[in-house]
Image (cartoon, rainbow, N blue to C red; front, top):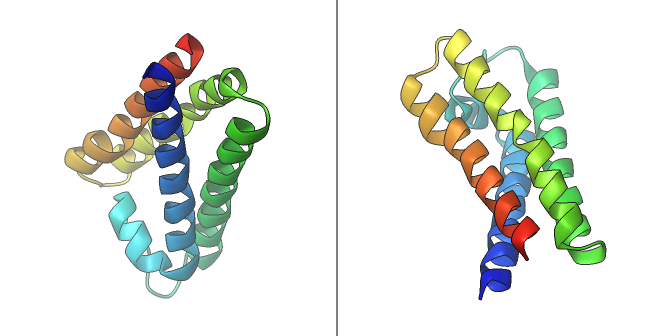
Length: 123
């Protein structure tokens, strides 16, 4: 049962990150607004594309680790990658975003990653 939950959560989290990356690539302005720091209509495209590629790549890497290496590698990956949404929390707070998005989206994501890492280490 624990294995199913740990793997299922890892797959779901990685797929969500792939989705977020795709959203930044295909609808970057809307994705930036959802991130918590709206983008300028006539600028920021390069940075939004970078974010999309970063997120998509991390999601695919997480899936590959889980599929080809196993739970232990995925747990370490999740533990380290949790730094990204923690940083995103600070970015949103420092750039005029709301506390609701900073903590309700980004900080909560970091917590979910850390919980999933703990579950994967326990498998």
